[in-house]
Length: 88
Image (cartoon, rainbow, N blue to C red; front, top):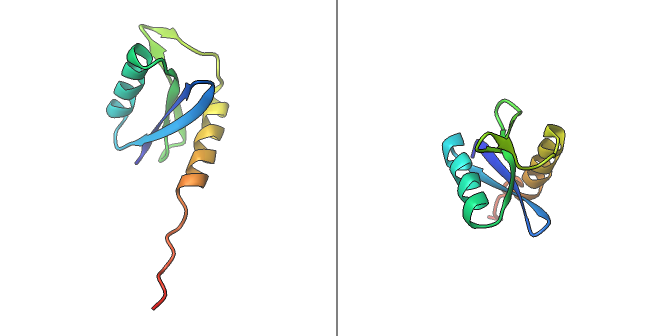
């Protein structure tokens, strides 16, 4: 999971990982069109770059890129814990 789509649903921020940016963008597009999601953008874990989401050339939110980074990093810290070895 290199790319993380960040969105808001029912006033709660969410993050969902994808292997490529096209899938992440597609998810945000259809989420905005059909599922009443408020897309923020896509975060690239390898480059630390944020791409804000635009719909038909227009921003759909006013969230800052740094807020997107903070949301992603919190999500990753909670969901990606190191694996523990099983007792022998």
